[in-house]
Figure 1 (cartoon, helix red, strand yellow):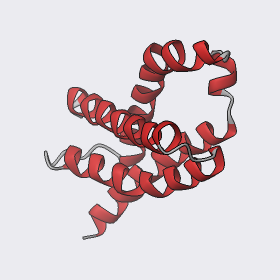
Figure 2 (cartoon, rainbow, N blue to C red):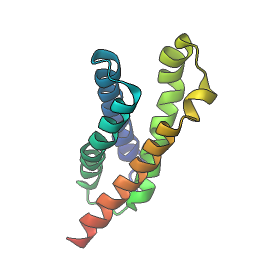
Figure 3 (cartoon, rainbow, N blue to C red):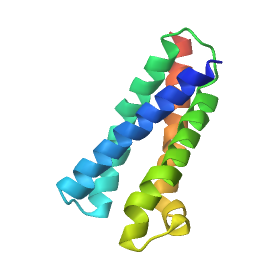
Figure 4 (cartoon, rainbow, N blue to C red):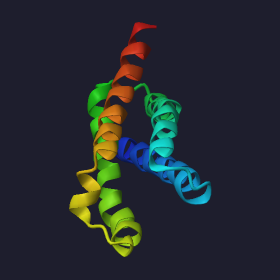
Length: 124
């Protein structure tokens, strides 16, 4: 396992999601439901792209484990950047942010998408 590479694609995955959410929720002012529907759809190519970047190195790390590493990286970045800079000034806190259903569903989706990518890659 190449931990540095896994953490790097985790940071990239978080950044892509951050940009996508910033565009749909803040710039375009879509409703929360519309933002999350778009988000769940766009997560598919973003997760596959990040997994593809990781597996270019021919590493054999289980995709679900890679997905967990990527999601854990995103959670840490959310704790350091997203919550203090964007959620708390709006009156939220760590508990309200991390207990939100849409966030939890997205975390689970991220793990499964990377795992599915790995399974499909192995079948080829």
